[in-house]
Image (cartoon, rainbow, N blue to C red; front, side, top):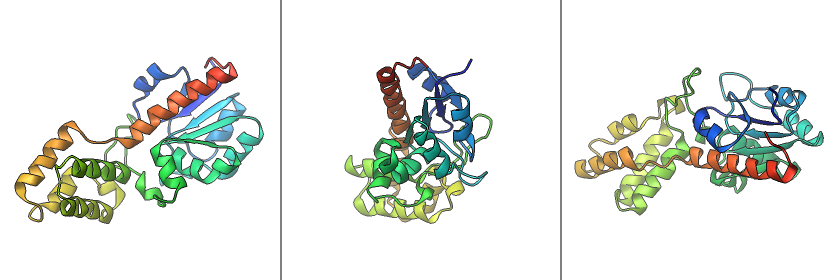
Length: 221
């Protein structure tokens, strides 16, 4: 069955959970040419959340612009979608979520902020994206779990690591001996219950906006 709503989704949000939020065709993280293929297949709304960065050629600006010129609505958020939306929002692509706004406003500039390694079959994340690390550390600081200097150290360690190597265990291990042991354990406990998954938050927001737009346009899925 062909859907008029196509969502490119991977590690940012579990597909089963996404399906409870939106009636759409969910496709794996987008690579070069996938937007064009979705248009050819009859999509009227394309929501780009996840896309490949280094495994293959990433989604091209021209294919998104071509879709927009053909009357297809294109929404971007969370990961590759946030990047492309920040670059193309003045040309008709719609951005959703905090990460999109961070890129749009120049607070974030590097693809590295949202990159991560994931299992290609299950889409399970195997590393932590830097934007989630930043948001979690800052939330812990605001809640008094981390002192400002400790938060700065953890963020600096995370930034110094190549994106596949960014894990909470690795970051905390690197910080050992430079942060009070009680404070570091308190942060480890915080990670068990309260990590901030900004990419997931934005993905959910993108699906909500997609559903809203579909209702406006009279598209059922």
